[in-house]
Amino acid sequence: MGKRVVIGLSGGVDSSVAAYILKKQGYDVIALFMINWHDHTGTLTGQCTWEDDSLIAKMVAKKLDIPFHIVDLSEDYKKRVVDYMFREYEKGNTPNPDVLCNREIKFDSFLKECDKYNADYVATGHYCRVENIKNEDDTETFRLLAGTDSNKDQSYFLCQLNQYQLSKSMFPIGEMIKPEVRRIAAELNLPTATRKDSQGICFVGKVDLPVFLQQKLKSIKGNVIEISSSFMEKKKHIDKIPENFRKLCFAYPLKPWNGKVIGEHQGAQFYTIGQRKGLNIGGHERPLFILETDVKRNIIYVGEGENHPGLYRPGLFIAQENIHWIRPDLKMSVGETRNYLVRIRYRQPLESAKLYQKKEGIYILFDREQRGVTPGQFAAWYDKDEVIGSGTIEANPPEN
Image (cartoon, rainbow, N blue to C red):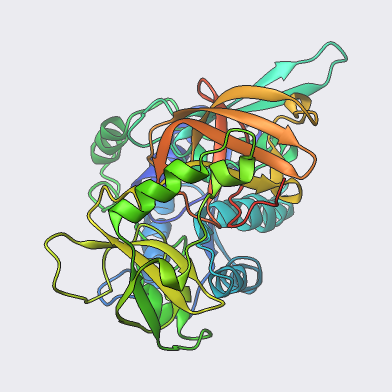
């Protein structure tokens, strides 16, 4: 029997096929299903619960003839992911729970749980790859690479993993494309072969976010202020001063007197930059989009049209304490400048940018302005198809 691998079997087609591949390769495979959420407040009706997922995962394990176990990690998930989400939204940020879930749960709490089964490795159904480099001193450096299927690449979601986590990780379908995964599942007659991919918050499912957030965040009426395109064009032109990184990254905190009040909202913390739905304000030829939120004043700023200049930013800032290097050996020194490819959301094409390492953190300036740069989200930088590092986007870079 080969080395032991514990696979996180979720009840989806990707982890099912990953389990099959591992067994076919001769590994001693154990399936472990994670329960991470019990409360269904705000969850949209008709969405699968963990009970449904666990039953299907158990059927897959039986079909593949591998041991099946269940672990309840809901306490950790609440403390380390959900409570974090509430804190971030309260501050006016838009967190990415999937990135946090991978860092804090799948590759930490779950990884520790796998030690109870004497696992040599932990596997998931992510579309990404891990490779190792032999160093001159006989140590190893692990590389996180994008999945072969560019339409399904999930390396962005793993951009906060560290060297130890990567050293214990296996991604059996990282070299495959989704249609091939579906084909194998169908040939094996797995119960997940035709199951739709899960959507929404990691382990919670698709939710009505305002309802979900209202469990802890109060609704408070505030003003919706419309900002004209001409005002933003003028402000951008005035503020584009090359020596000032702060103005280049977030040149414009908007003020109430910059526009006109056109309606009310139920709480600035319930909205995010680039959002279109949920405003319910008429009288415009084109849709309104959120340009900026101000939770202190409880104001949201909107602009008409999907190409409103206020939706675009030349750059972003990541505070020093929030910078994470997957490759510590490639960490930048203060004063250093490098060119990387950068992604600020899942499925976004990689964009060319220049990274400036300063004492206070990293400034990222894009070759072309980016739409919907959102505080609280993660920016990840790549060298070709390798993820080098990442960090959370700040709302207000320091003055420099």
